[in-house]
Image (cartoon, rainbow, N blue to C red):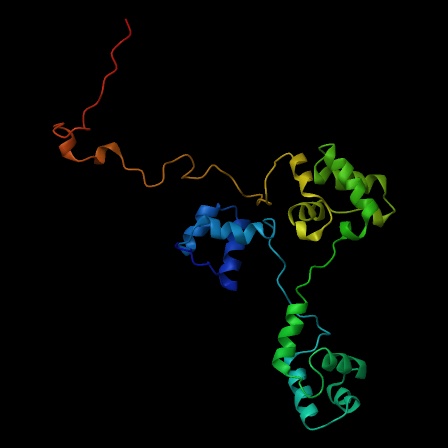
Length: 245
């Protein structure tokens, strides 16, 4: 049994993919850039509900790789946590937690610790609707009445003008619907949207493209071979249907 090899995309390819998706290109058009199947592109996009994930950045207060390397050297020299903290200009508690969560004083390695910190930051952040269940209940009720996210956001702002805990943007509602990992709104609510689809489309998207409705790889009748004209080969004959009597 032959297995298909898994398709991998680099970060730069994914960035180009999301940019073209934002511009309204189709899955087939985007896949053509990489000479890949459109399903491989769809897998990347549908994972995030068609909404481009924010670019990952390290927090300004987070430990940097250079600091971790300095910490590793200081530990090898036998320096105390307080002296290392003073050397880095960090709180002793920060240094202590960093060392404990990455193997302790004898097994601490700067590169591995830095990679581990970057991977831990991948855990999903709870969105507003996931943290505010009464607000999520209000949004759910309106969605079931076939209100659009824009209408819901406007109604909340008008009904609770002084209560920020009862206000939410339409974009947050869309993200909560299409990105199920947020755990805020149930997927079945998607069917109440006016345009039912599995992931968010760009506002520039349209099916009225140059290739829409055309057969891919079609050959014009004017390009048929001359041998067809003499009808010497069975199958080149054009059948005629006798009229009903």
